[in-house]
Length: 174
Image (cartoon, rainbow, N blue to C red; front, side, top):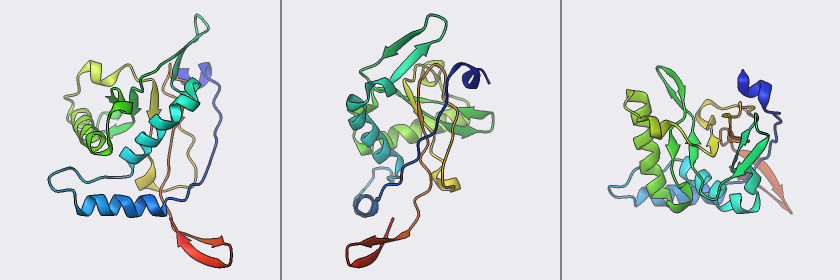
């Protein structure tokens, strides 16, 4: 409630074509060996981290008492995680330094720590931007509440197949 009162929320919805990305993810998973199975989340995090330099105000925190915005170079990505105790937001520190395999391992580790109640306080604080992935639940658009004092939250939804008109051909796209 405090976040909704203190932060002006708006929603921007965009659709992206991810057929090639899904094919790459499937290929990587088929040859993963002992590494964790890749979900779409590590790829989204890599894309976010690569985009942040072009939109530095998204990786920021706002002190509403002082009226000061602090931008951050490192992306300490909060990852909204549903637990029996409610929603928790463990933090992937320096997410911009990790590859998809490292991100997948860290996602699993932090989610398990949060769900088991073993997450340390430093693993649950200090995020500069949050992602809340509602993909498995479906839906067309998401309007998540910003994780105060951050200034933005990203809420991707489920990947769906749609017919796409591309020139003279109609093909199936994800």
